[in-house]
Length: 126
Image (tube, rainbow, N blue to C red; front, side, top):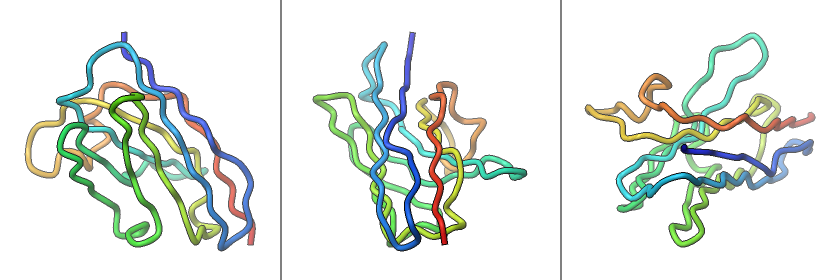
């Protein structure tokens, strides 16, 4: 049974930084893509970033490119999202996701992921 547990959320002022962590367990993730999504109040869940577990290829939403960095530690089964220069519009619940998406650009789609964490709240004050 795959389990994803996020941590590291909190309240931060605009311009500050946070690092989210996702602990993955329950299987070998060598062929998986790990993603971060977020959902703000009243909005749909949106793609933030993704990383291939084995090759380390990374993908970012335009809104976070240059400010967020996704990484993974395969030995520890951990995925991280370093968030810098945070803005109030980054306020959301952030979710870790895992699966083996197929198709070009599939990593962008929420529906491509079958495993999700419970989410961690990130609040950025102005």
